[in-house]
Length: 315
Image (cartoon, rainbow, N blue to C red; front, side, top):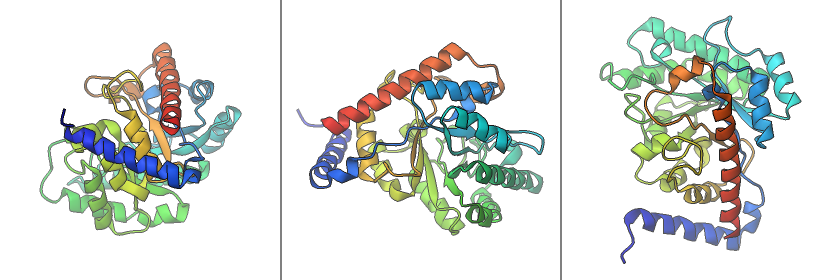
């Protein structure tokens, strides 16, 4: 039977991975860094979240970028103490960009909100040792464009704080999101184009998300190869946006692609973010969590990811 096109792409990635394992086995020595994005845990104290992650063997955390105002958000000293007690380190910050802090808005007041939010978030990221901040060029939840100039406004606005990323030694990681949720920047290629337009050393990296990529990319593995060294974080969930192993995601091909781009190095993270099937997951960000359900999400995902990683490396 003739192979399907996506299977042919999978085969090419497998062949490249097998060549890597044969010719440069030292590049497979270190394992991928497993993190977790905690904004989906909702209104839960950080100590409870840290305990859950530590029990599942997760050693990094991507913190909710919750500095929406001067009086809101995690405090650096308390955060480091809480995470340190559980053996966790901060991988990065999940920047949250909505209509109120949209980098591409046609309202100067809203763009200033986005700048102020980023300044607070960069300061916090530096204080807790975060390696990156996720940046979305346009508001999540606004798939309809303002006008033909939103890309240019976003580029110009982000450039105003780009120096701060360099000064803080924090990477700006641009996240492409599916077209059902944002009006532009939907693919890895779009993110690279946006980065080129900003044209600043503080904005050079990409945050991928396999859920969004499944809607927008022709092939997940090839898209990851295209992201290459610019990829610093990858959000993960299965095909149904549930725990890994509970859908039809081809996780093995993703793992092979990540090893091919040398992603098993410091500063690069695989960060599960299984937000569940259905529509808008963002209301849960400010709601009471279902602790039993979250425990299952974390334990199932972490265990399954490590099982598949080991299987890929031994196959």
